[in-house]
Length: 447
Image (cartoon, rainbow, N blue to C red; front, side):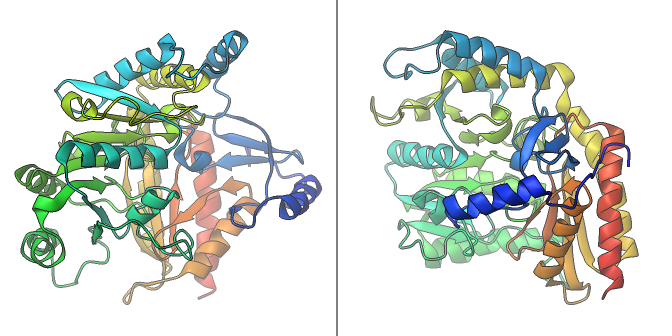
């Protein structure tokens, strides 16, 4: 294949040596989706230490929407590094932080006055959004979703639904967190259509959850991914999200959109919230905000963001100047290239091939996507929809052995997701899809 170049067995000798060193020196708790070690990357290609070249459908878990080693970003980061690395914005300020806050206030959904605070990671953004929501409302309870993922710090884990591997053995978790079932159109009851299923979920919230689980008057905020990330790229019905936002407003509950993975063009709009016609009270961002440098943000209504006492939020490294200039250049690149439109084009190509795989194989139970966020759900049986985690693992392994880096996801670990950089060339995209198709079909024949 033109872009994939495999010179050694995978992993190659240098990667194997580094993997052995990793096992000796790095905690076993840090996962390794592939045994490959990168030497360099450009666009949607990864070059490993053994001279092999891979097509990247992982994008650093969705953190490199504008591609590896983007020359514009490299340039501004180098320029900033020559001036200063760090001063701590809370001690000696710098303009890039302010300019980034101004930019995020402008581009995030919502025709109201906004303010922004910067942090280091997606988990930090979510935790601080929760802190701000509790301070503003004077309430303690938080609602999240069973299929949601919001990070690995303790409060973020409390909001997260998947137990293994994220939560196993790490409790007790913070109290006053209550979970809803995230809409799953593939696994909804057979007898219900989408409208009936939506009615069922909303009725359960108002007539069961709010009566038997938590009083809405005690709830500070609802935290929701508009497309689940680790949850397998589930996409909720638009009416469900609109009604949920309405219910939150009626009960004085803040709506926090976790757009850590969906943000910055990935879904075919700059933010996934735009697909659903909602304006979140607070929005959490990270990953492709800075194209991979450590940075996150919370942007929200001015009156909410300003409710916190001075010193109540912040941190030594939050809004690091290198990350801020990277983010400003990343957003500029996304806007100039209209990468959200490219995400739709990518999604159309991917979903056409995924739907064909679903039709032609027994192992693909569902194919779904929003923009370039697309997923295959691998099952043992299309009738029972029993998840097949082991086959999913085999597919991922065979993919990287054949030059395609791709990730699994899902509550049951049986989904394959696409997070390729949005600058990927059509030939690279179709080449990577051909590798995936071949391997899925091979695994299908083994059933």
